[in-house]
Image: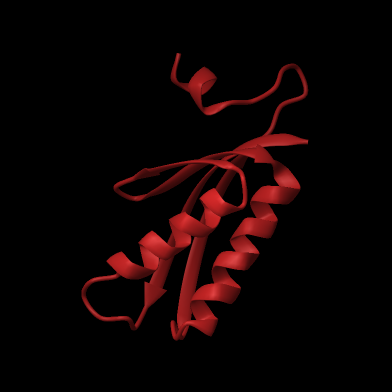
Length: 92
């Protein structure tokens, strides 16, 4: 099932700047093959729902393995049955 989502991954206890963790998380989403568009407060994605959830799991596993102790992730997920959801369609 195709879906769109807004994902916000917040590293906690990593200091004032979390730029490196955010860049790493975004790279993992892109590597997962889902369309990912970074914005100031998160990332908009579209793709197969299972792939989105799997990519979020990989973000957590990777950032933890690389030393981030705590992560809080907020997900807004949208799906439809009448047509294929896309980020572009949501804008117009």
